[in-house]
Each structure stands twice: as C-alpha cells, then as structure tokens.
Picture 1 (cartoon, rainbow, N blue to C red):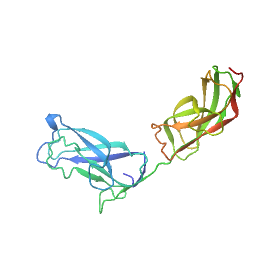
Picture 2 (cartoon, one colour):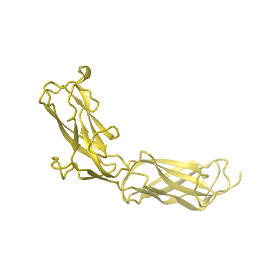
Picture 3 (tube, rainbow, N blue to C red):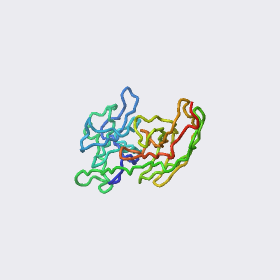
Picture 4 (spheres, rainbow, N blue to C red):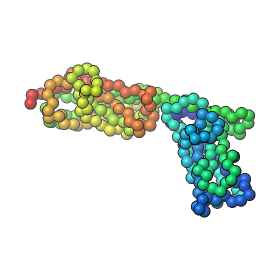
Length: 254
C-alpha cells in the first residue's frame, strides 16, 4: 500500500492466507464460508473501535498447509486525515473451526516497509482536494406572468482543486432583497449527476411555472447544493450564490 493516500481514495490490497493448522479449515455447519476484512485503526491492535472498511467473502474448505491469495479494492473514508494503521483480519466473525486466532490479524505495511522489517509504520492519510461549485452566469427574462412558465439558463464552474463527482442540486431562490436567507423560497430545482474536474463547467436550463400567487419584484438566486452522494464534496467544499439583477418581476398585477 502507498505510504501516503487521500481520504475517499480507492486503494488496492493483496494478501495471502495460509492454514497453519493440522486440520482442514471449514465453516460453521459445513458451509465453508468466511470473511476476511480490512480495518483502519489508530493503533496496530485490532479492537472493537476500529472502523471496518470492507468485507471480503472467502470460501473453503482450506486444507492443512494450503494457501489462498486475494486481491481487492476498498475506499478510504472521507474527511479523515492523519496517521493510521491498516489491518487485515482473516475470518473476522470466527466462522471457521480455527482454534488459534492470535495470528489472524496482520498489519498492512506501507510501500516503504512492505515486508514489515523493523517497527510497524503508519500510513499517512491526507484530505482529498475539495471542489468548489460556483454559479458563474445566469440568463432569465426580466419579467413574467404569474402562473406562466419561464425558462432560464445558467453556468456552474468547479473553481476548487478537487473533483466534484456524484449528485448535487442546482437550487433557485426568490428573494425580496439582495441577501439569501432561510426566509427565501425555493423557486425551481435541477438535479445534477456529473463528474466535474477542476476548472470544468457545465451549462444547463430549466423551465418552471411562476407561482400563481406571486407578484412584485424579486431577485433570483442560484446556488449549487451538494448532497451526501456528491462523492468528493466535503464540509470544506463551498458553494456560492449568484444573484441575478435586475430583479425578476411580474408584468401585471393579479
């Protein structure tokens, strides 16, 4: 495993399990199945507070002296950073007839120390660069009729250094002043599901009916809103609002 990895990164792991016992390893009720698992830990000892990263199903039986090799990937949790230990645990739920489990846990060594020579070393995790979804421009009519459809166009650019990947929602708000706050109502939304690298942008459009009860002058705000499924957008990522001026107005009173 690399010495330094990023939060949210997918990494690969290869491991070998050998049955050092004198009898065949079998599963409970002769199903011959168990799970190896990868954990992340603040120390080199497997314990209940370690975070499970992924289970890797295995099947037997495994004869005495026999081995198997597996190679899988898993994702590092988002929003974590610092020095951690990676642990590989074979038969973590104790499904087999293995009576000696003290050697079922192996520390995953970094690339600088792949064979575990010397003291156990940690793997350094850096926070992944975050995206910054910025509303750059918006084109809308300057007037409209209540109850009638209106169409507008906009552009959003990823101004941050990180990849925006997954789902987010472009939300449009109507406000009676130039400050967007919780009292402003959502006028329209457009769901997005994209991969947007640093510096990339997209242009989109939506048609939406002006509420029939609406009258007066308003300012239309656009704000891209990341969701929990936006894979690389963390709490450190930002979104910005773009007010459209002149104000959005209704052409005739109700």
